Image (cartoon, rainbow, N blue to C red; front, side, top):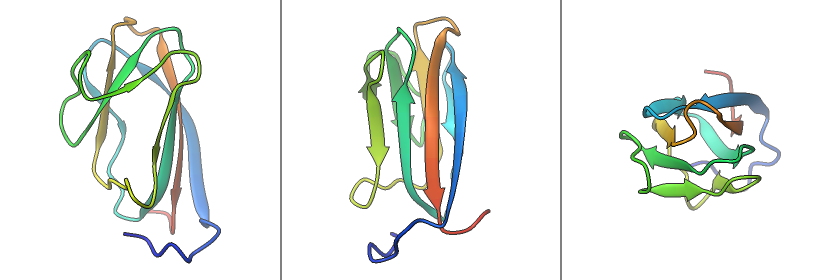
Length: 103
């Protein structure tokens, strides 16, 4: 768990990810992760799972058109995050991940 007194988070990466109807890793594991925001910018629901395959209509659901999920101090997960959508490749999420040094 990162020390909450460290501010600001010194490194971050931002990228888009196309979500398909097959579960896949959208945020790879990072042992030095300090936070992560995943925002759904598509018209389809997106479902997330931490550490195992994502399944439609279960797990963490992100609403279309701006719904988001935040991993922070009290919800931090360092492993792989998987995603799935019924949008057949049309779902798009943006990911912003902060960490304390490049890995």
